[in-house]
Structure formats: structure tokens, C-alpha cells
Image (tube, rainbow, N blue to C red; front, side, top):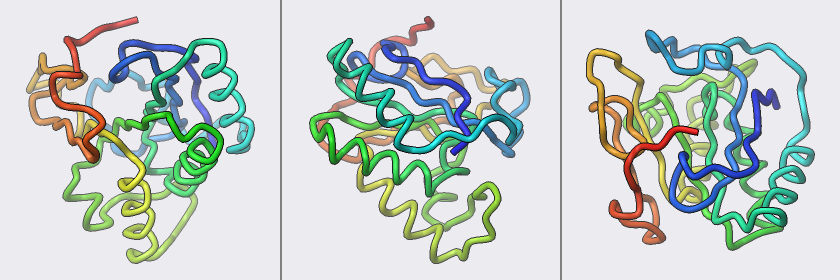
Length: 180
């Protein structure tokens, strides 16, 4: 997988103290994206196991509540994302999982997303999203839109939505926007 960065402990990327895995690469092209250095699909490839071990080390050092996946665009490396979630779930089942994606839920449900370096079928993309969604506790979905500035927790645009996929969290668990 292409990794942009890993923050071992953050309070600005979801409820509680969380590790944040930033995937490298995004072809969506949101105007004035806050993380343009993460757009190119270039850089060193690392194994899912290496990233998982780094997250687990952070868990030991910081007593993490969960992990948030961001980018770049995590869904453009959906195979690696799913393997990482499965690896972490196996070794640390208590961790919660969240994700930031520029795709809308409708686009994901309809397999209307791109996977880097892969011409996978619509059915394969649908299965990947279904499996990933089943592991996520929450997601922030939708493109950044500078014309619609937002002030809701974790959402920088009014068009972005917070989706809760489990009962682990309620909207009240998502506090005001923080920066680190």
C-alpha cells in the first residue's frame, strides 16, 4: 500500500485518542483540498503488516480508542484498507474504526469509486465496500467543497455527512472541530 503518513495519537480525527493512517493517492481532485501532497500515487510502498505493527505499537504507547483512515483517499486502495482493518481487528478487537472519504455513500454503494492500479469489476468493488463498511464505526463522506464551508464536527464542508455504522458512537461523541 502507499502510505502518506501515520499519526500515532490524535484527538482531531474522531472520538477519543486515535491513530490516523493517511493513504497516499487521490484522483478525486477537490479544489483547495487541505492535503494536496497526498494526491499523487507515488512514494514508497509499505506492507499492510508494517502499518498494522506501527498502529499496534501506538496502541501500547497511547492507549488508543481507535484508528481513523484518511488520505489521500482510502477507498482508492480499498484492498489494502480492508486487509489493514482485518489485521488490526484480529490483533486488537477493541479498537474502533473510522474513515474520511471524498466519495458519497451513494457512490460507494453503487461501486462508483476508483481503485488505484486496478481495473476490478463493479461486483468486486461492491463487495469491498460492503466488507469495509461492516467494519467501520463511523465515516465522514463527501467531497470537500470550499464554497460550502462547514462547522460541524469533522466536516469541513456542509455537504459532507457523518455516518454511524454501529451503535458505538452517537453524534454527541463528535465534538467541535479541532486542529493539531
